Length: 190
Image: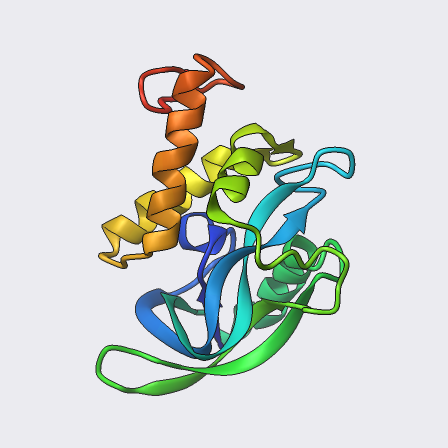
């Protein structure tokens, strides 16, 4: 079984896998289009998390993790508990391709565009404002963004929107001197 990761699964998969490879998924784009009321925000002060948003002509680069048959059920249970905390994500099977054009079926999680937590279309400056202040049970929303951008850069995957958001959130945090463990020294954790 392959699992396609595009956000926090890139840097924190949380399940056993045998190996991974860079992969591309057509027809979807990575986007901060899901309001987070658990992991990176609260009902009162929602954050934003990444989701795969269906979009004709788009493609998303990420990692495909290969899970051995004996670990498939345990992995699916873990992912469902983690990703389906609300019904905003849908678990679907997709076809991914690697750099050599080899295709494989994979499990991934996409946004339900009819769900109340779907919030596509927010301007990037507004996204940066939300991400710079939101905190949920898994930590600061800014940390989620920074970890994702750092991993994408390490994988040599460019995402102009996320890189812009990283710069702007760091600017906002710098302007606020200190917020939730991030300091003026460009977001270094204390």
